[in-house]
Image (cartoon, rainbow, N blue to C red):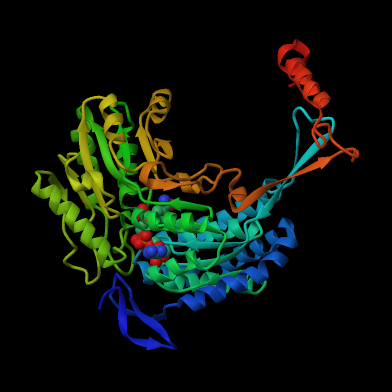
Length: 511
Ligand code: NAD
């Protein structure tokens, strides 16, 4: 049976999927796929619950989030157990990504939410003596959040906490590959005392996600693949609702001749193989200067050979999450092999383990006509390409349809920054990689096929609101000079105002 399999049975009038552990292939249970009617009903319940939630104000809303954080700490073992079973990642990866990072998300957003969402008094130019402006932040209403399987709690919790703090109700559609982790998220928010229907989870696959887009929601926050992202964008265009798309990447790492080679090799190894390479911002391409390439390759190969793969006990690299993904990895590595790449280590499924394991793989001699250099692999592979200049490295790094993150490894920080400014990516790290999503002060998102819109950043919560300007007339006089009736005197008065404002020094200053 597949990791996610459509079962030939209807349960309570719903399609049924069977779910397996990708590392051990053990049966994890069945899920009922929410129908279109289920989805509509969830959105209607959310709509009814949202105004009261918005009306209690951000400080009160944050109190629920602190309780959610207590739940995460208290239930860390349950979370780690479930996430590792569903995704095949290591326990420490689960603790780091799905518990630790989530506690930090909650802390940061809850602490800063009152300031981020505070009303602002705006200045009105030209009409300043007569009017003033207030900018207030209103929740969109019901936010649909659709998430992938590689960070089942983290990638759902982060947008959920932001949307809830901003005063929205949330309907979450998690990946069908990891449906049980999101049930724990639901249980934790319930235990935090969140009012009924402010947060709901609808379980299902792509059809369920598509139904959510047409169920009357007010905004979509999507994390997933480029192909699905395009469908989300089309549906949001049809429904005229705002959306953010956090999509895939083919993130380059540039290793300069003056890099701390030990750090660059260790960093490339960790950031290519962490979470079994199933991280949107993982290192997917390495461009190394020719003069240090042999030494760099030797170091990463040594690092990689030392990685332990497994499904229990102590190990470094877990399984692939689903068959579709391991097929992509196979296809990319075989294409590279056929076109002349050298495989230094790995390059095959792990024959000693039962589940979906691909050995951590290092390849060199990779060229841009290979799939592995052009398409997102999302697996434990590190394709390495030699370059003769930093100029060439930047040119090759930019020769891609993606643009999520990138990294530059050099001891010359000034040079690193100037190279970063020329790389077309949503963010660039110097002497580090795959780190932007965790730096909450920084906006995260992609250019080109890597996405539309941003998550995180100092104004993040505003993305879950619309800014509502309230313009106030100070004096409440009976009429305005530009209202009816229109007279010749008004016309010449306006001409005089034009001349004064844009032709005299004092007028220009006032304008
Ligand atoms: P996916 O696009 O297959 O699925 C993502 C979600 O969309 C799932 O919940 C799925 O059920 C749902 N879905 C599928 N078809 C749909 C449709 N027609 N309408 C609405 N919803 C639909 O992606 P995946 O395989 O789960 O995740 C892997 C991808 O996610 C990779 O490309 C990875 O780079 C990307 N990703 C991006 C980020 C980021 O922040 N940029 C983070 C993590 C993962």
